[in-house]
Image (cartoon, rainbow, N blue to C red; front, side):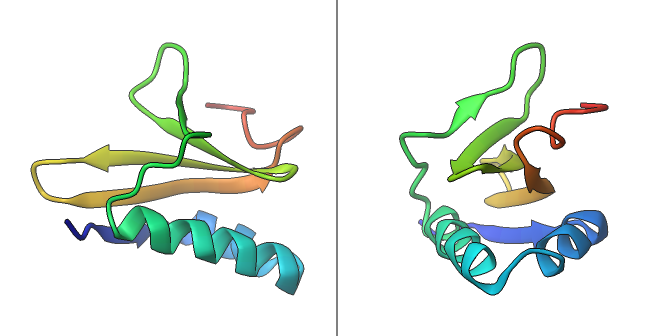
Length: 86
């Protein structure tokens, strides 16, 4: 089952600011999400409907809408910064 992956403008800016190697690793994980594969490292954030995906020292914060088959990427960033204001 394929999912549409939608990246918010702020998450896209964060992704473009990363090194090429890290961005490629995150891109690989996003492609897996598009194929409906929810990785074992994906965890639901406490008190939220959002999930987080661990990619080395970086985290991807996202939501999943199963009815519309959509994954929305809300934030991408280093683990020390990405949870602020979430």
